[in-house]
Length: 181
Image (cartoon, rainbow, N blue to C red; front, top):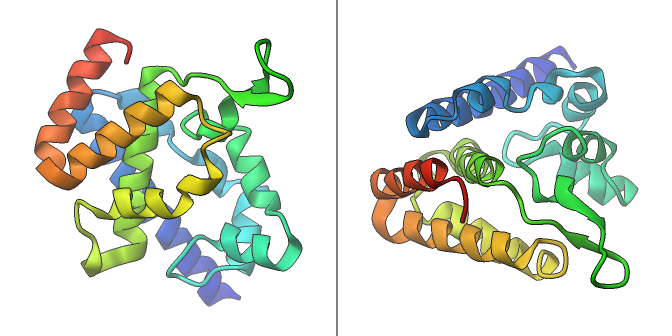
């Protein structure tokens, strides 16, 4: 168990440091520093240790076993860079719907996706990895993510795939300066 705890700690810390580094590159200093601190809380860390595998999120393994992930439910409710945080009752349609994410959290979400792909893909990471992961999860997102947020996320991930980090991060700095998408 100690072995898994140490490796889980290293994995989430590597992820956090990558997000922080990329957030700093586009000017999101406070978000970079505070990114994913809830992963170190007992509710998320202990579950992460229990389901640790090293090549994917422990939340996926917990979800497969239980039908839900308690760690993920805790995490998404405390971290505004997840579009799931922004799901609420809709005034215009029946049921729940995704609200448009503020631009600073959208940018942090992009950095989160890049870092997760770098950590879990390792040497197999390319600038297309975040787009490829998004394409696998996309069928589950159409009804949950706000259409403008989804369109901008897709634009950014495709830009990353085709033009790389340098060009994409330049675009993100401009987007943050503008304050909207």
